[in-house]
Image (cartoon, rainbow, N blue to C red):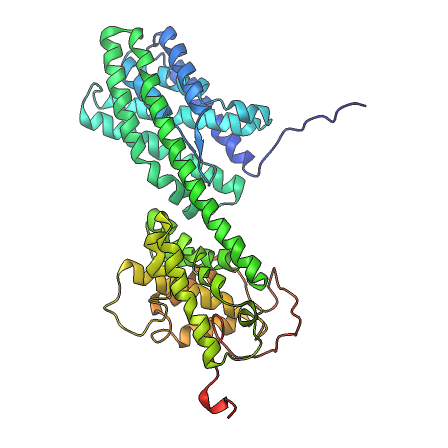
Length: 447
C-alpha cells in the first residue's frame, strides 16, 4: 500500500510571508546590483553556520515567537565587516542562517522563506544604519543599529504571528516585549567579537559559541521554571474541578476576563502574569468546602455560610506554602474582594483583587449555576455598572465591559459553551449573586 503523500502546510498568513520574501530578494538584488563591497566569504560561511545552529536551538515562547542569541552573530558580522561588505555580509549570514530545519521537515516552506527574508531585511537595514553613522564602537551607531534591527524584525514577526495563529497583537507584543533588552546584551557581545575580528581575523569567531550556549541555557531554565509553575497551578485547578465539576472552566474564564481588564488598564507583562495566576487560583479554598454546599439550590443558613467563609483561611494556608504563589495571597484570598468606595486602597494587590472580583462576578452571572440559570450579557453589564462604586471598582467594571465590546464577544444566556446538567433544574431567577450564594436572613429562618 502506498504511503499518503505529505502535503505542503500553508498557514493563513502565507500571502504576507510571500510578499515579505519578494521584497527581501528585491532588496538583496539592489544591494548586489549597486556593487557594494564584498565581505570575506569564509567568515560569512562560518557566521552563517553558527547562526543556523543558534536559530535551530532557539526557545519558543507561548505566542510562537522565538528567542535565540542569533542577533549576537549578526552584530558580529555587521561590526566585523563594516564598510568592507557589512550590508551584503550581514544580509547573507541571515539569509542562510535563519533557515528553520524543523519548519522544512514540516513542509512549511512559505514560513521558512519568510523567516529568512525577515531576518535578511532586518540585518541589511541595521548594517546600513551602522555604516552610515560611522561604524566602529560609536555609541550612536551601535544603539541605532540595534533599534533598527529590532523594529524591522519584531514588526514583521508580530504581523506574521497574528495572521497565522489568530493571536491578538497585544498578546504577541506582551510576549515579545520582555525579551527586547536581549538585543542590546547580545548586540554588545557581537560588537565586541566583531571588533576583535577586525584586528585578529577569523580565529576570533568561535568566541561567539560560549555566550550563545550560556544564553540558551538561561532561556531554557527560565522556560522550565515557567512550565513547572504552570503545571502546579493546573494540578490545583483539576482538584477544584474534581470537587465541583459544575464550575469546570470557571477559573480559566475568570483569568481571561482578568487579563482583559489588565490589558485595558495598561498592566506590564509581569503584572499580567501575576494577575493571571492569582485569578486561576482564586477558588482554591473550595477544596475545604463540603460539596453539598457548593451547589445548594437555595440560600445558605448562617451556619453553612460560616463553613463557606473558612475557605478564605484555607486559601491563605495553601498559597503561603508554595513559594511562587505567596505573593498571590492578598489577591486570591478575598481579602479585598468588595470595593467599598475607599480610594485610598489603590495599591497593586488591592487593584488586582478588585479585578478578580469583577471577573468572578461576571462569569458567575453569565454561567448557569445550581441556584440560577445564566443571565444575559446585557443584564450582567447592567449589574456591573449599577454596582460600580459600591460592590465593584468602577475602573475595573468599565474596563471589562469595554474589552468585551471591543472584541465583539458574547457570553451568558444563549452563548454558554460548557453548560452542565443539574439534578434539579436551576430556576430562571434565583438567590445568590457572584459566587457561592447568600445566606438566609434571620427573618426567613424557621423558629
